[in-house]
Structures are given as C-alpha cells and as structure tokens.
Length: 371
Image (cartoon, rainbow, N blue to C red; front, top):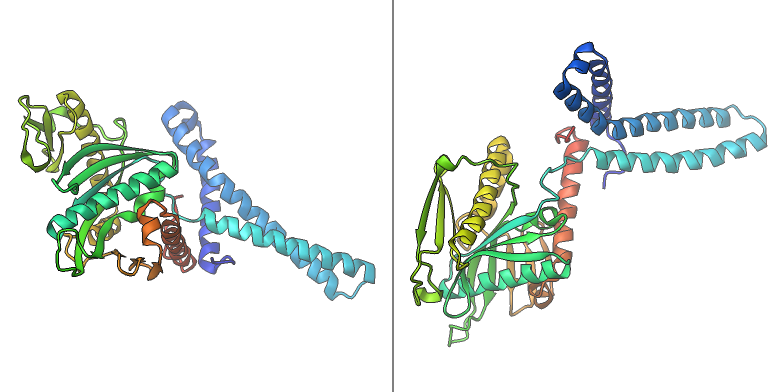
C-alpha cells in the first residue's frame, strides 16, 4: 500500500477542500433556501466531502506541530524540553501515518453498486458436454460459497443437460456486499481434467463463461412496458423431453437495446415473468453503466469474451489440484476446497491487487475519485 501522500494526492486533496468551501458559499446563497432540490443536492455533496476535508485539515495541523517540535530540538534548549519534543515527535509521526492512510483510502473510487445483490450467469463454452458439466460445477461452487456467507442463491433460469451439467444457469446471490465480493469473477473459466465422457483417460480442456451483474432495483431502472416484447412458450426439461402443455415459459426482449431475458423454471407464467424481468433490469443497468464508462465496457468485454479456450482468466487443473488466476499470476493448490466454495483466498487476492492498482493510479494523479 502507498504509505505517504504523493504530490498528486496532495493536489487532489487541496482541490476537494476548495470545492468544499465553494459548496458552503453556494449553500449560503438566498436561492439555495428557496430551491429545495438545489439545497438537498448541495448539502449531500458537501456532507460527502466533509470527512476527507476534516482529515486533510487535521493532517496539516499535525505537520505544523511537527515542524514546531523539530524547531525546538534544533534550537538546543533545555534537556527536559528536548525530551518532551522527541516524545511529541514520535506521537505526531504515528498520527500523521494514520491520517495519511485514512486519506489515501478515502481517495479510492467508490462503486455505487458494491453493496448490491448480484445476478450471475454461467454458460458452457468450448468443450461440449464436459463444458456443461464444468458450468454446473461452477454454479455449485458459487452456491456453496454464498451459503458459507449466509447469503441466498436463487436460481432464476436454467438449462440442464441429461448428464447433470448446465448449458446455462442464471441465479441471484442476495447478501450485503455480494457484488463487491464477487465482481471479479466475470470472465472465461477453464478446466483441465479427464472427463467422465472420455474412456481413453486423456486430459481435456473446456471452458465456461461467468458474468456478474449488480441486481437493479425497479426504482433504479424504469422500463417502459411499451418497449417490451413478451413471448410465451412451452417449457421443457433437460434434453427437450416432457414438454409442458401450458405455455408457462417467458421470453422478454427490451426493444431499445435488444437485450433478451427468459425464464422457464417455474410452473407459473407470472413467476417466470417476474424472474425474467429481474434479469432484464440487471442487464439494462449494466448497459447504462457501460455506456457511461467506456473503460469498464472494454474491460468487461475482454473478460467475458466468446468462451474460446485462449480467453481465460482462471484455470482449474484437476491432475495437479491447482487453481491459477491468470490476471494476477497466482496459483493455489487447493482446487478441491475452492470448488467446494472456499473462494476467500482467491477473491481477497484479486481485491488486494485492484486496490493496489487504484492507489498507484491515484498516487500518479491518474485515478479519479468519487467526489
């Protein structure tokens, strides 16, 4: 972690302090008292800035006190005063270190979606039936991980195969901080193992894609019903057998974006429609965020890709009992535990690398903050 305030950070903190003062002046204007919306907006902006500005002012005060103590030592005064100055310098140094760390963390960009529930989509990629079996393994891994955190994992839509795999499965993970915890899982996951469908004992490579979307509240993403194309059809079980007589499955297309969401798992058409709308809202929110932040768009596209073997973010190697995350170059020889839901070491390593990267960008003056 960056331990000291860099010149770029110092400049950013001074800029935030100036903005804090400007907001105070704007709030004091007569028009702010007559415009409730303006008053609320300015007050919220200033309230968000206040903690970091107060810490920055305290840091400057500590620096001034440090200079005073150093001057006292340099003047060669009485031994008792020098001893007091040295003790004070030690305390001030610790206080400056703590304030610097808090300010650096405070400058990190904040994702407004971090505390949201998530909708996860897993789809079999290259590898046929083995890829579908791997997609099922990944779903069980995330479901067990969610259970270990006391979170719920609710299946919204699934397309199972006769051998117990998943062509695709869409599910919601509900819990505080679920998106912050799981957002780095988006991408192509690769498995290397001897498949149950292979009699010759050769190691095969297959893939599955994972997408992690923050679940959108209805108030956040308002969709005009006139912009929806809703189709119903008969749901089928694995392998396309046992067709239901009623058209309970639902497919919804958002015409302005072309986004399609479907659900056939519930017997009730109403329930399937509700679940499909949850998935649709998450995709619409994701698209809006991506349109606003082109860099995030490019990153997510490169992560998810097309499911080809070369576009991997992580490899699960069964013969060597290892999991390797290629984005950070880390390997864990605990594949069995990880597939059983013990994902913490992997997720924590990814979060730490992201945090270090953001701090480095801010230190160079390249990163934007949420203020």
